[in-house]
Structures are given as structure tokens and as C-alpha cells.
Length: 45
Image (cartoon, rainbow, N blue to C red; front, side, top):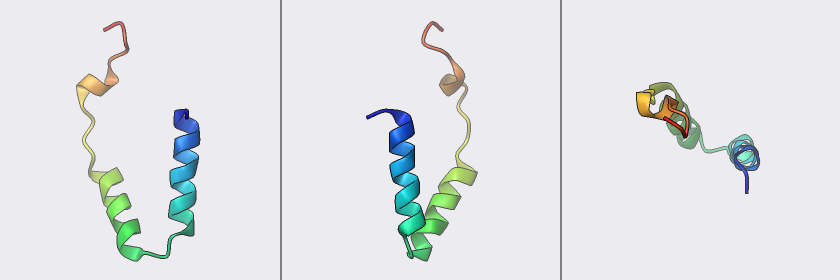
């Protein structure tokens, strides 16, 4: 499965969820995740 499909599945699960703590946890994960310089490298680097 490709990344776009996985993102859509996760998004659909979030949209269908009524679990407030899940939504808060996801929001926290997204807003506090630090960018690692290693993640910015391409496959040749």
C-alpha cells in the first residue's frame, strides 16, 4: 500500500472517531514532533 492510501485510511479513522482523547493525542503528536535533519535527506545523501 502506498503512503497516500495509508494517509487516507488514517484520516478516515480520525474522522469517524468520537474518541476525544485519541484526537488530542494525534494533535499533540503532530504539533510536538520535531523535524530531524536526517529525515530531510534524500536517498542519495
